[in-house]
Image (cartoon, rainbow, N blue to C red; front, side, top):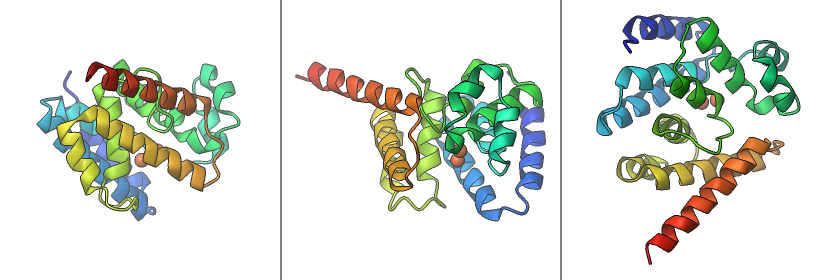
Length: 198
Ligand SMILES: [Fe+2]
Ligand SMILES: [Fe+2]
């Protein structure tokens, strides 16, 4: 799938939408930089990785109500008590409705970037890692996490997820049930992996 035209128009729109939110713009650009570098390293589709990065927080500055109104009905009840996570839903909605993106891998990566989910593909995992380790984020020294992602996506994904979890706890966020399920799944996979190493 050729995303070059769509990508150009998304980047133009993100620059325009975030012109009064320089920190958010810097974050999105940092995520894009990491995603591009991960995609190169793992021989993935670079344009697709950039589409995911530039769209993941495109609606971040909208209101809680806006997010719910601009989400698919099936998600509205699941997210109504978790406003912290709801920009992921509206961003996926915008990706599909405005930019006509139909690829499940892109829509899933955007939808699950805040909460994780049971099963995620490599693009979704790399987005969660990039979201935590991009250079403008203040999660301590995340260079190690970036380097780890170039060696072992699963280990880096687990690390990024734990940093996200701790951040949400520290901010007193009500943790979304998808997040809890994703966390359990990561633990389970980790136990299986360790057992197989014996
Ligand atoms: Fe986000
Ligand atoms: Fe983000």
